[in-house]
Amino acid sequence: MTELTGGQAVVEQLKTERVRYIFGIVGATFLDVLDALYDDRSVEYINVRHEQAAAFMADGLARVTDVPGVCLVTSGPGATNLVTGVAAAYVAHSPVVVLVGGVPLEHVQKDAFQEFDLLSIFRPVTKLAIQIGKPERIPELLRLALRTAMSGRRGPVFVEIPRDVLNDQVVHAPILAPERYRATHPQPPHPDSIREAVELLQRAERPLLIVGGGVTWAGANDLIVRLSEQYSIPMVTAYGRNDAVPNAHPLYVGPLGRAGAPEATAACRRADLLLAVGSRLAQFTTHFDDRSIRPGTPLIQIDVDGHDIGRYYPVALGIQADAREACLALLEALDRDGVRPARRAWREETEALRAQRHARLAAEAGIEARPLKPQRVYAELRRALPPETIVTLDAGAAPAYGYDRLQFTRPRTFLTPLDLGGLGFAFPVALGAKLGRPEAPVLAIHGDGGFLMNAQEIETAVRHGINVVTLVMNNNCWGSEKAYQKHFYGGRYIGCDIGNPRYDEFARLFGAQGYYIEHPDQVGDVLQAAFGAGKPAIIEIPIDPEEFPIPATAARRIAPGNQRA
Ligand SMILES: Cc1ncc(C[n+]2csc(CCOP(=O)(O)OP(=O)(O)O)c2C)c(N)n1
Ligand SMILES: [Mg+2]
Image (cartoon, rainbow, N blue to C red; front, top):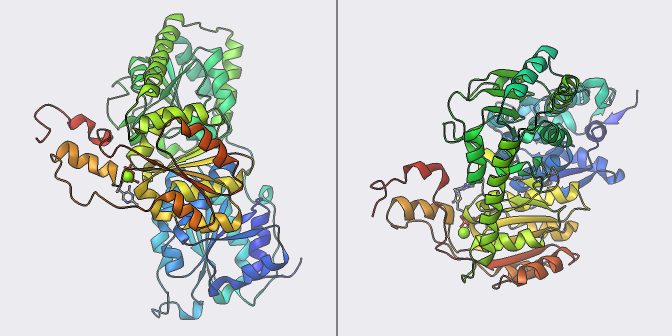
């Protein structure tokens, strides 16, 4: 057994999971880990400007690679600054490992400098929150954290290592590879459940696949498409999961749910059997009501986590399994069955809905208004973005138009704040994604409000050479919230308007590339230049400050008489 320092033990155990980057801000509590990186350059410390961004970066990296994203920060504020980013990873089921160099054990329970009950702070936003109490247990308890982060439905974990447990310590404990401490084969479905599912599928006249993020985490994207093609089951995607299927596929109708395609909702309402794979069917996909899913529609729900099966809608059949294993079993069973229903009428109906969606979006390419409408910006983006581009979307009104308007060809290319809905997400997440997939063009889409929440990371991007392109649609307001005051409070605006610098100039001040666009014809050329600039780039587009969608979560309240004058 080799003898390692506490810092080396941390680094070596992380390396078995293919960790290449650790995000954070230097702190006196964990210098042994940094010191280990001095000699071992196979792991790089990405030294950021605010810990919140470190957590978002780790999340972005984990989502595009399925390698744990790791943060390493100091006690007290270093850790509390992470919370929002870790919450984003939690709602995205993203395996982020939070390491905090804590106050020394001998100072615990003394209200010492930067001493807080971090375990209690992080427990609600992680799958597991632990403290390591002995140097020899560093590898073992890191493995507990990694096993939890990477097993079943993935998610963030929190590990506090008090500074006297970590620094100046020798560790005599083995470092093990993942296959020695966690299951590396996914969970197959029960054969009886597959038999029942096949019966239901063969009987249905209008089955519809609802494809969720679990399909991407399981690497089942190709199999879902085969299932759809071979058995004539059209597809819609869950909220923020548009990239789970190739959007150009003739059987793909569109994204369901909040800010999604009404045509996808129409298909869902017509279906006589729903096959939800890797989707919780949660609020932003279904609104928890009958808007998309008609009461009584038979539902087969496949999920790796039994906790969410039948949680919001009763199931005809629940199957707890990995999405890929379940798709393989279904394909085999359906093949054995030998019946490949054509479902011609249903296919024609969903193809008409698909065509309707495309015509609706194509018409937006003709919007000539100035300042530009976000809808027109997206029409230009659809034309200009290389198909392999990873897009990260912030919260906010202008970004939200993207849920129905962007096209995806590959999995793990659309990263959104999901149920967190947090502003300031897209830019740092894009930086993490770019580190994970350096060959892919990466675009962050922001409103002006959300961008300035983590804009300081342009310095990190320039210093580390992380060449992400950021698009800021500037309406000089917190537009998405201003929309509520417009539609429900008669335009009595309070706390909605903000000011901004020119973001092309802001970029240049930090040594990045800056662009300012007022004409739609410039979008394609500028994007091409920005992706090829050889440095991070920011593109500002002033947009119509009066253009807000009707707030999605309250859309049902817009009834005559319900709108204040
Ligand atoms: C961290 C955080 N704070 C506040 C909110 C509430 N909120 C949601 S969207 C929004 C406005 C976003 O403004 P901007 O980024 O400029 O985009 P716009 O809506 O104007 O397009 C606000 C304040 C939030 N979601 N997240
Ligand atoms: Mg704005």
